[in-house]
Image (cartoon, rainbow over all chains, first blue to last red; front, side):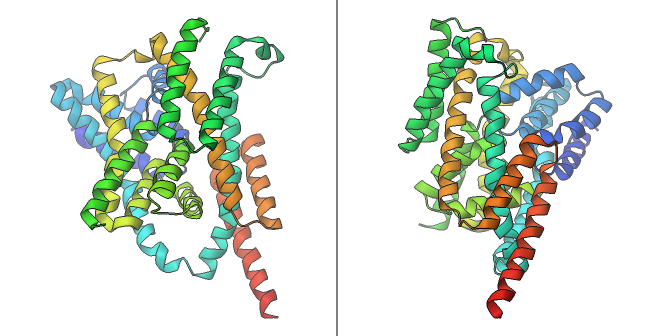
Length: 197
Length: 185
């Protein structure tokens, strides 16, 4: 029964992926490719799709594979397959966080929990900074760092968009508006200068 | 505000967050910060750091974890249910469309250009979010050390984030118990 199998497989993936995002990639590779649900190359292509669509990778890949596998049974099968896989990948987080949230308020004042949090908060700042370096790398040096990059229009257009958006963000413009303007700028300047992307 | 109205607002807010989080994971932090903390004042910036710490140390994507957590904090079980549904729905619908009709949608030049722009915008949003949270966090020597260590270890050494989280939690526990003992004396 493919629908049950989709649910169970993605439940397992959701349960054992700590940290989220691409941390789940090895597990997906193992489970999904082993089942013959998707080829390695298609999985790699899908990473690009997931980067260009909103939402977490986990949800995107579950919905996609569920939809493809269920589609053998028509469009409604595709929707149901996507539903089963997505429900599977979401459910473990949902249940665990629900339990944590229920108990957290009670234990918040607990010395050990409060102590752990006092160490974790600055760590999270460091983690976000690390994520920013990663994103900055893909924005400014998509094909690896090199001095030659500084002479390309692609680099400078990115830099200008980044600078404008930083100013808007500091002026507390809604992030949704900032993302929308960035997309429009990317398209208009991209076509105007025929940027090689 | 009545509870059912709060639940509806949770759904709408997380739907927006789900629809505009590109790049996953930390990319949603600026949105949560602006929509949930600044605009609705349901949580504080300090709560966001706590939620990320919890989300990083439990299974599943940060998006789901924070939606469930914030939803519960604001309006109990149904709050967490509708917040999670809201954050998942945009991805679900868009990926369904892609899988049915737009399999090669990343090949379109306009899509490539749009994301070229969006990535730079997301970077700006992240920098601003980091800046505000850094400004508000309690600062002491041990905090600076942990901040720097977490950053260096994750950026330059190929070490799983989970170990960083566990290590910093342990340091926090030891440090605060030593500090508590000193105050007693």
